[in-house]
Length: 277
Image (cartoon, rainbow, N blue to C red; front, side, top):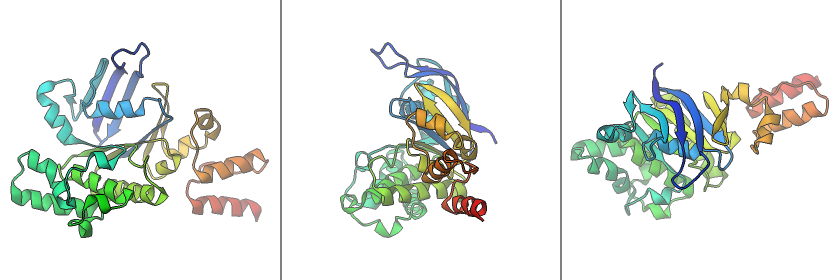
């Protein structure tokens, strides 16, 4: 697969700060993949997300989106058509009083013809499971439903990649599950590239790739089954591992020889049962 996002020697320092927020980030995100960027507060992960979409521009180094340098002012609209952004608070992205009008807002501003807007809105709402709520008032929806409407608004722009910056941070467990199931489905069933920024380990289990950040640097990069067994290192970084990994880690500490790469509840139960038989 080709890389849809690539960073080379990426550094970023906020104006007025003396300490870098990002220090030499080199990554490639493959098209069609589901990548999670994980880190504690202040690790630089949200700053990195904004650099992907040209909301911020590198202090030094380069970010390219489908080969387009995000620092090229003449191509910034192309970058933002390619990379859609979803943020923490869905209320900040909802601008209309009716769900379908909100989803139509961005394509209308892009000058998309009315007939095509109708098709895009209906398709986007179906893809996030919110079509039956198209005539509802957004402020009457649950947090998880609002976030799915916000995702639909991004999908209506027909991006090739969606970057979600801690989209579940303000949601309850039900809302978090709704959003993670939605973005996972977008990747697996629709082939869309998904980059999820989070500090919730449980949201990483179904990803292709987990990139762990700390103090503006990448400290681990690999498949979840490769990263989660290093539970001790992750805890040192202030990250809570999934409940399944935590249980297996605790049992290992107690002397039971168990693998740490069983991520799902079913896998975890199986390896424990096999050891106890």
